[in-house]
Image 1 (cartoon, rainbow, N blue to C red):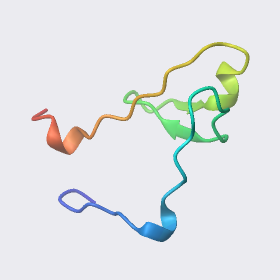
Image 2 (image 1 turned 45 degrees about the vertical axis):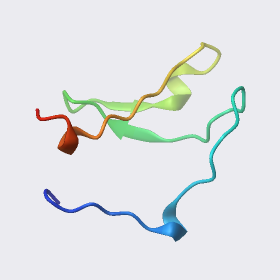
Image 3 (image 1 turned 90 degrees about the horizontal axis):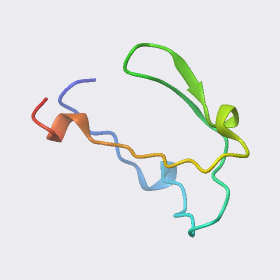
Length: 57
């Protein structure tokens, strides 16, 4: 929902330490394609979440 920020202490995941495998998840790309972390298994991968609502875009 645009204009709302959904934060909840009970829905937060614990922070991972560097080198710790991330839990499996999937999400939609900006083009609508579903991407899964499993598709990058065995490769070094950086996942960055940018808060679009705060980027001015």
